[in-house]
Amino acid sequence: MKALVAPSYGPLDQLVVTDVPKPAPGPGQILVRVETAALNPLDAALVVGAMREMMPVEHPFVVGMDASGVVEAVGEGVTGYAAGDEVLAYTHFHPGTIAEYTLVTEGPDVAPRPAGLDAARAAALVSTSLTGECVLDAVAGEAGQALLVIGATGGVGSFVVQLASRAGLRVLATAAPADAEYVRGLGASEVIDYTAVDTLKEALRLAPDGVDAVVDLISRGPALAGTAAAVKEGGRLVSTLMGPTEFERGVTVTYVRMATRDGRLGALAERVLSGDLSVEVTATYPLSDAPKALAEFAAGRYTRGKVVVTV
Ligand SMILES: NC(=O)c1ccc[n+]([C@@H]2O[C@H](COP(=O)([O-])OP(=O)(O)OC[C@H]3O[C@@H](n4cnc5c(N)ncnc54)[C@H](OP(=O)(O)O)[C@@H]3O)[C@@H](O)[C@H]2O)c1
Image 1: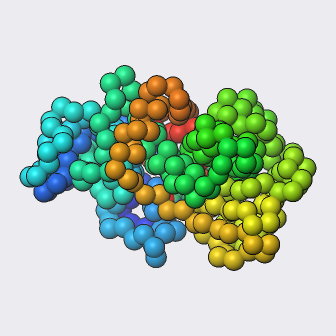
Image 2 (image 1 turned 120 degrees about the horizontal axis):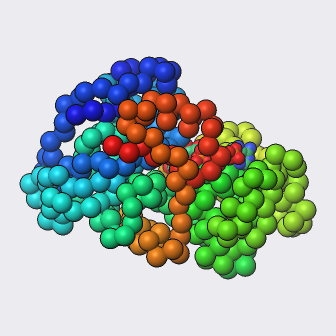
């Protein structure tokens, strides 16, 4: 089968679309014929080897972790799915999803694709919405509390803004001017143009005692100490990256690692189908152009939403 492959750790320009063996479903596994795969920042990090200590991969490495497609075959013991079912899946990047076929284990990593939800949006919502929910769990906010979201226009941020606003939080969201209406449409109460003003100073102007929580999807390491300055005493800082474990003024930090849970993926897909949540597919590339897709995505060509590859 054809797949987007990294022969070894190295720059993104080594990526090729080439033939690799078609996977076979083992016990409990589902073989999915991929219709659409979505790109994530982690895909590029795994290719270049930036995560090789924490998340080593085997080479040749088939890239991708989010997919939507049709069940081709099921392994022994699979009871909830059969050939022909439409699904969306998170494969933990092993094996990758930017390929004609991928494997997923029956359980919380896979869900039926609701009738009426197209494959592109289904693939685009997988890691983003699941991470968004994990982030919201860590925020543990109450209606009326103020939440600053830094990186609000990206895949994860767009879900954080939506989930937080649906939960009744007052959301302050960063966006470049061209994306201001987009984040307002997602549910942001106030938009901070991070390209023109200092995000943290502006957040403190809008919430003079500090916000109840900040979700920072951009800063890592010591830079997060700066972010914590926008949080009120005893408030919360939530990050999807890594940094210090202790902050001044009783600000607590949670470093979120996305996890799937029974029923969550299917429920999120239903919410997107119903229009309660939305996911924007910004660009679509064919599998033959997948190396270009990942290179352009990693270079920051797209300012919001998701980039997908159709297979
Ligand atoms: N821990 C986990 O389990 C987990 C899971 C998923 C993602 N992540 C990580 O979380 C981060 C976000 O992921 P993503 O999928 O949402 O990425 P993404 O789709 O690439 O979005 C990043 C967004 O940040 C914006 N941005 C860039 N610099 C900014 C700044 N200085 N201030 C405010 N906004 C800025 C970008 O908008 P512009 O185009 O306007 O710059 C873009 O919309 C990534 O680092 C990813 O690796 C971690």
